[in-house]
Image (cartoon, rainbow, N blue to C red; front, side, top):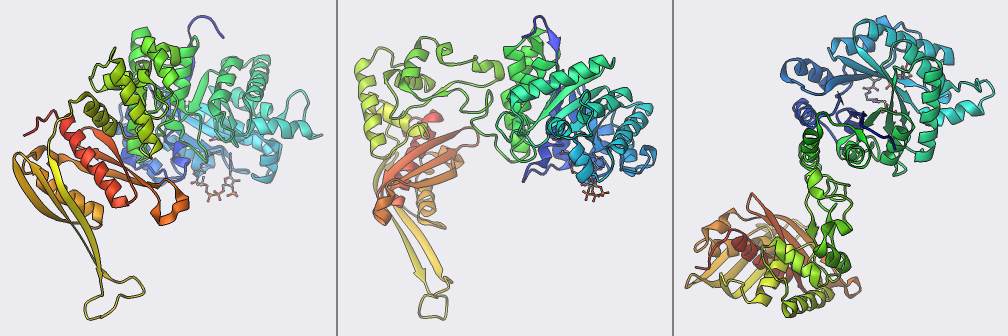
Length: 561
Ligand SMILES: CC(=O)SCCNC(=O)CCNC(=O)[C@H](O)C(C)(C)COP(=O)(O)OP(=O)(O)OC[C@H]1O[C@@H](n2cnc3c(N)ncnc32)[C@H](O)[C@@H]1OP(=O)(O)O
Ligand SMILES: CC(=O)C(=O)O
């Protein structure tokens, strides 16, 4: 590890390589919004697309000139070297890069001899000419120019296997020197296919570093661009930093072609928190403030691309600091750092305790604290609740995914669960009728289906008998329940069911199986989850729905009426 504080530049490619992931499609407005977030975080470079190749990217760079005011980041236009046999100044793609107005241009160059010969179908010398010519033209126009060395790591193997290769300067290194010698500010070895292991990345970046130094190009920065096909993109980038890379490329939430690029947020957190390198601008306080934005940025970008970040993402995922095992909880009660690699607040995340069949008394005590309930020292209550949780989980309930239902269980055990309403009965029915004018149901499924539910309950000293209709029995029951409750508790009008999951627990019993239903309800501000179990899906759903409404009233601080 280095000593002292040195800088590594964070280079974000969410808007270029991130957009190469299946089903990710940014609008121009999305790109502008993501660029503003990245600038706020403090990345050094934002690679925003390929003007001239993708019309939306051409528009982005045009609008960025007037609509994007970046405070810390430099905007990068991405493209390729000029075509074989074409002078760079006459190549329309190179012209489009200049016309984008971006102050920085990164061009991708073939650095693997096999790719030059088979994909580009040109000579190794002509490819070197394309690199030199393109960098020279862009640099002469006043741009900072960087060169992505595509397939650099595989390229060294291919070069060394070739009898024609210079053993002192394998072809990928010759491409890097051609770029540096023509005025590139950085060369970035890319693990384009994502299959290189970290030790190999480190070793080859060190060779690149030595070759640049030997040629007198010390001013040329080495970057690193890794993909996650072998699950080691972040590790590879860290190995490259150890070997001399001073720029790390990656995408927010690990978006990117195929399995994604190195997750830039993970890289930033690792470098800032676990090494002496600094990636974010400012003094220690400012860097800490920026780092604490990581979780929010991960979620915000997830919303913009309409793809919630995986809950298991390092540092920023909602499960990154969620503890389930009882033994962990018992140590965490003494000191959270005993089972956490960092304090989650440093990256804007929070620790959560999960209650399940793996819970012990400490898990229950810590979870209760999240609800503002102090159970410390109440050994009898904690033992009773722990046992109830284990028994109910054995019967099919799951509380780590339904902390709303767990809160009700805990309050019931303490005897402080408010009684908001009492249910007298409920009923749900579905009727399928033939289409008008027909006597029998159509075999093709064209039928008229009517679903209705009746709920009878007492609330606020009154009895309600309410009919609900819906597109299925659970929906009809939900409508009937809400229609009754709203008359006494208008707060429930804000409750909305946002997720509904059904799982058959013992598949061997077929349609007689036990069924578990998990639902999420939101009031627009927070979301809570509840669980129901039964031999019938409607019965299990009803239990989860009832829990969901009680939890909502509790969380709103409503008193029973
Ligand atoms: C590793 C990476 O992720 S690099 C980023 C890749 N990103 C993208 O491809 C997204 C944007 N791409 C596009 O819109 C299109 O592919 C374009 C506009 C670039 C090219 O489209 P087309 O002109 O229709 O060509 P096509 O995609 O079929 O083939 C690519 C051409 O570029 C050439 N080429 C590929 N890499 C390079 C390079 N590094 N330098 C110069 N030329 C290159 C190929 O030889 C081929 O040339 P040819 O048309 O003479 O056969
Ligand atoms: C340039 C690039 O995205 C790659 O080689 O993976």
